[in-house]
Length: 349
Image (cartoon, rainbow, N blue to C red; front, side, top):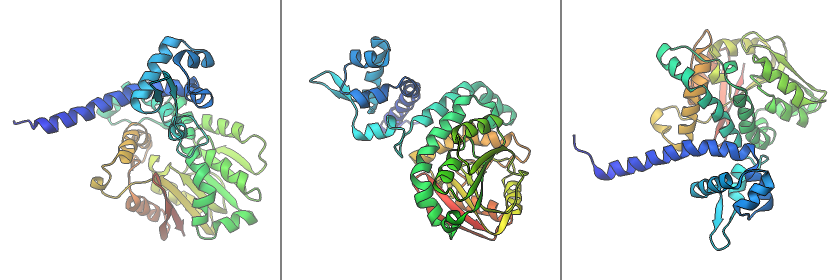
């Protein structure tokens, strides 16, 4: 076997990058938890001593953390003044939770992945699944934080208007079900914008429903219920939405079939899924890399834990998702709109 030294060095560089990214993931999580990025945003440029004082942390740890973030490119270093600061772009990604590109929740979710590594390794051998409810709480919180920024940016201003006649119904007063709602971020965003409509968020994970109820506070047009996609209660819904959850289901066709039965005659099903091409060779890019990794660790095991074990995965692609929806009884399915990270499918009976 002959080794191409140029290719070897290039691949070794990628592996070094992988190791660095994995190691720094923990530091990003710590920086988010301790408010280090937020403190730099609010008070920078700062020395390591000043940042430690601002955050009640140990200066020696802070110095090494800052060096790691500067080497990563998430913090800037002013060599002349020996101070650290953040650019607007770095702030948007790591320090501003209201930013549409804030990524802090993704690193919080990774804590659950690493905590469950031994269990996932066993699942590779046995083929057993790992239910969503079997993960630690940081997965639920991190997932909400990661997706909520995109929902706040796109859901009511872009995605819903892309659906035929839906916004007009919501303004008049409609019945809406959000299936697999988790902590209720998507449900709450819609309920706040359309006070004339009635919203119900449904999720099989009781802990998430309890948290969703807490977050909804005193909103009068919303409620949250524990239920499964394939047999939840309710009828005559004008809009049913599934946000980044259909591919996690063990029996997505069964779920869609039941959803159809609970919808009004002229209702709409909105299915939001991670952006993906239909062919593997077209998904070999940095975004799909992240989606495939989380899918291996979270989505496929969740589906495998359920009776149907469809295991669509987070990169199923538009055709496979469309075929699933049509198999559940919908005759018309189209991609209404899309973002860099999501495709929004509209289905009608």
